[in-house]
Image 1 (cartoon, helix red, strand yellow):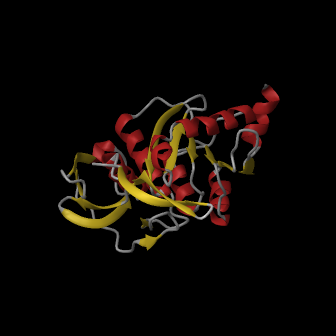
Image 2 (cartoon, helix red, strand yellow; image 1 turned 60 degrees about the vertical axis):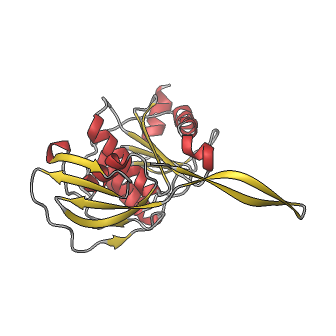
Image 3 (cartoon, helix red, strand yellow; image 1 turned 60 degrees about the horizontal axis):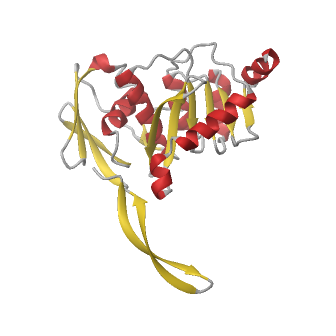
Length: 260
């Protein structure tokens, strides 16, 4: 399943045209079938599809872990993923549009998160925050080829252990959740990094996976700040090499800085 597509575009410089070969990121509809019933279609980049659907079902509260999954099978041409569970499930009746790229959907409400995050969590110094932001850039393989793609990663505070790329920022967090459930890396603390804007569904997915710190290159929404405050998540935006903004629970950075 290809993640990029070869194209040609016409580039103008000082009014002069030039035909340039290039690659663009693939966006593709992928159907999710659960226990033989087609549920919905996800618009995504067709890579890590098993992780995408496992993470989506986990974030929607349909499964609690891999113990609920019998089999996950993407079809040969990548336009459908079959998931078979150990138990029967009823499809949520009300899917609502989210503000995610490519039109994400969820059945969860803003107050409906089931937080898996521990009450305490990682403390990081400002230097660690900026170093992690740099590490996120290094994990952006597809972005370096095409641009126009989001990346999210899961870290223990020292290094990136899992990463995922997709045209939809919400899909990257579903893929991270799926990878975590499938591979279960040893993590004393969970720090989530993303290139995408932190909207309400993004912070809900971060809370679901148990992240105590969320670091983004861009801004949060008002509702995501409210949820992060309530859930005890340190929410960091506009992370660059020499600066960042802490919107909620700054004590995790302040306390770590006093120790150093």
